[in-house]
Length: 80
Image (cartoon, rainbow, N blue to C red; front, side, top):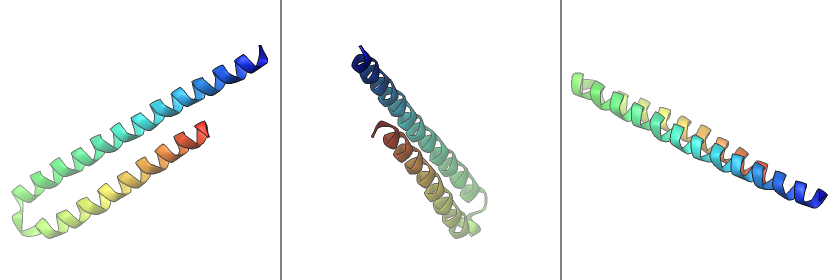
């Protein structure tokens, strides 16, 4: 019986880790989409600062990707 309880707990942890990894990926996608939309709107309003906006957008997207990757790794570590 105890082995069954351990296996059920491991399966539950794996399921929650998968949900957490999925939420991290969805959050990153929404964040980068918002950055892209805002950057394009800003570039349309002020075309002369396109280079600065693009550089800021790339830095912000990289930071979001880093956080999402960290979250996915933490979720995978829960399983392993």
